[in-house]
Length: 299
Image (spheres, helix red, strand yellow):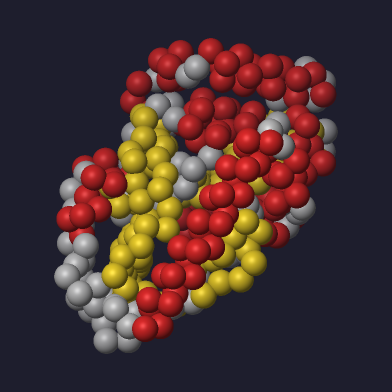
């Protein structure tokens, strides 16, 4: 029987976590293969100490199929799980992007190259020895990013774990530098023939140069010649994901809980908070101050 673990249900405004509840849940994470297949997952038996299930990347079309009699459900997040089909080739993929996205990526790459003496300094890593060079530079950069400061999603300290993945040809990493200064990193692990968008960040002081978008473009350029069939942007929305994806699957993250008073109170709190955040986002869009709000959320 699978074990239940404490799962943080974060109450967030943008990238800022105000507080979190940690019920014991049985995780059921669906892969990109699962999401694209579109079928309803088979839920394992619920351990006695579990308060319920936490399903991520459930195809939205299967939402009703997984609801269980006697359990209460709540959709915490709706999003498109975006991906890039690496079998189509770089030229076909790039041509499939919107004209605005293509021109924007070209302009950003040209501007950054001009700041870097006329070329982009992109460094590539995949072997255990190469990861030993990548890791300290990327860790120092990660510590400065909002992904680590606010989301706890920085590059892990575990170099040995990355090297084990590298020994199995299951990791790819990139570092973008400006002079001798790292300004963006991307570290991805493999799941079969799919490469996962795992750890990413850029130097806040270089944000005006869009280093993250430029590095993502160069990483994808490499991957069209690699062994992978798919690049998976994983769970959650993001403008860059929508712009650079070749396809996507409408998904939800679903809580299925035992109908206890405590669990009902948890869902009532989540609904109220998420509804308030949604109304706040609507007001920000209506007032046209998205950029200011984004800076405040990320500090």
